[in-house]
Image 1: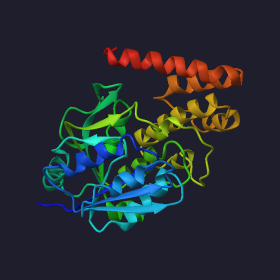
Image 2: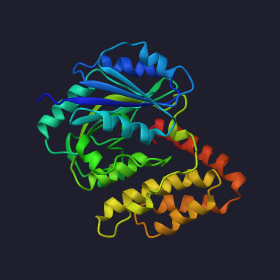
Image 3: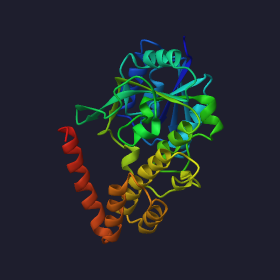
Image 4: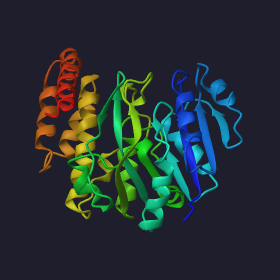
Amino acid sequence: MNAEITVVIPLYNKEREIARTLRSVLEQSYPPREIIVVDDGSTDRSAEIVESFRAPSIRLIRQPNRGVSAARNRAIGEARTEWVALLDGDDRWEPGYLQAIDRLIDRYPGCGAYATSFHVENDGRLTPGDTPQREGLVDFFAESLRRYVLIPSAATLRRDLVRSLGGFPEGMRMGEDQYLWTRVARCAPVCFSPERLVVYTRSASNRSASIFRPEQSRHTLEELYDLAAPEASNEYVARAALGKALIVSSRGGTAEAARTIAVFRHTRRNRFALRKVRLLNALPASWRRPLLDAYNRLAWALAKKGL
């Protein structure tokens, strides 16, 4: 099979990384049909660097700053292929990534999402991502409660399915990817390969996940809690929402974190995360961010040592 794939790259102030990202796409052993870069109101030279490539497969679209979800949705809407491969402007692919995706689509047809494993790059060091170890269809929610199955730069999605679901939730500042993964996996199978063909750059400049901004979306993770859905599905949503609530609380969002606690207070598999949010939210607001930052640094150090 030769699946036609569009690469979708949201771009905001990545002048230090975007050239490397684009080169990793242009060097694919299985080339995409098109590469759509949506510059989301960058204030640096990011867009000019994209234009300097002059590759016929690259299409640059400029728009005022509306957030990463809006940029991805714009590119997905403009795509002319059945499949869209997501790639952030500071991550990169190994040369065989799209070839592996094409093989998965051929071998495991009918899925809503295909993905591979990845490395996490932090200050020049590569750490293997904690992902499933077998190729094939996965129980997305059960696996995602223990390890990573989908991350944006390693996910290729069926375009018509994403469009039918409304795309990424625009205005949601954190958890927008888990929101879409939940909706996709509730209505279509997910396929995974343990080949590590993606590099997620944790230490890149202007990483969107590290920037806290107030929510400007009518969508929430809490709305995905559905008593009619399988338990693992709701527990995955609880995990994502409680992780987000930790960050929100550390930035002073006491009331918002309290609402998340109330919605997911009956979680069975995320009791530790629930206790962390409750504890953090009970502390003086000025203490929360330093404590959470210190905890995260310790957790990352232990993870790198396999602990």
